[in-house]
Image 1 (cartoon, rainbow, N blue to C red):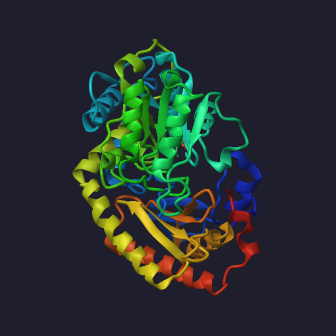
Image 2: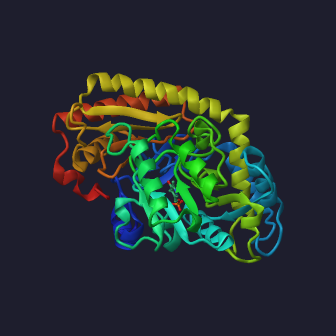
Length: 441
Ligand SMILES: *Cc1c(COP(=O)(O)O)cnc(C)c1O
């Protein structure tokens, strides 16, 4: 189908949207969506197994979201939390503090994206502690702004330099065993004892599941061991919950699995259910560092904050944490069932409703398949009617982060599509040329 220009939406997209903001994993071009379905140009409905990398936790057009946002936009309490206190933002901050464990007096900052939130966390922690070094992990993705990309370690980010004074540690990978937790801790201690004085370290950024880096679950005790070192040296432990936080992992916060208590917690994606809002929660003495230190005029604005409240309320009203565990278990069982039939699946891993399958050349070597193979599965699944993405530094991990409102029937439907896509790709149904435009990183 074509618009008035005679071009498809996809062709128009290619003509006007900048490559620097594009990650097109399939030809899907959307004109709408409802529930767990996305509607592409021409009217075909596709099952959403990616929730747009996570934000669409309530799916699309959820009645509670429609109601909250419609009410907010019809009665706007201004458009800036920087200029005026507003009911929606203050209430959302109260609710976020209520659901997020932490000691002492804390304050909340609101922005628009995970990127600006990590950016702000980095800047304010450095300023308030007077320390300039940071630690983060190879494979981490903390955002696409100057600050947040400078403390990220994704291979797709080698286009720009890291922040001076950043140490990138390997994230221990229990499946491939590239580094063990013990080796990483030993290396960190060695750095601390030599050229990276811990008293100069402002903060450590941690993803509780290294998602874009390959959906890697930290080995038990690893994050707790990091926390112990942070406490010992007065280093702020900053946990980036942007991707996996707020019920998706089967807990309200993914860090709860580790028995840790971060100093600073960063929220994004799911918080707005698709509308732009992010938050940083941290100790008062850091977050009150200086009036007007991190202003964004529309951060915490009336409408996005209303969306945030609707998401938190739906998590409670619809028992989405329990649901993430229940539907997540069905998905995991289903994926394990596929593993029994498809040699290409080396491992199924994840928590709640953030799940991945690691595609390998063979199970013995655990060598990743070429990214083309992963892209073919995604492309074929798109043709069959489901949308999801890939992650991992080798691009070999299929990532499933559906809306938390996904039904059992939809879970079964998606699993059947993944099964068929694996069969078809195994039979050589998709060519390298077909997927060449969809290999993004
Ligand atoms: C996506 C992501 C971000 C950045 O969020 P944006 O909404 O893209 O700005 C930060 N941290 C993690 C862990 C993410 O997955």
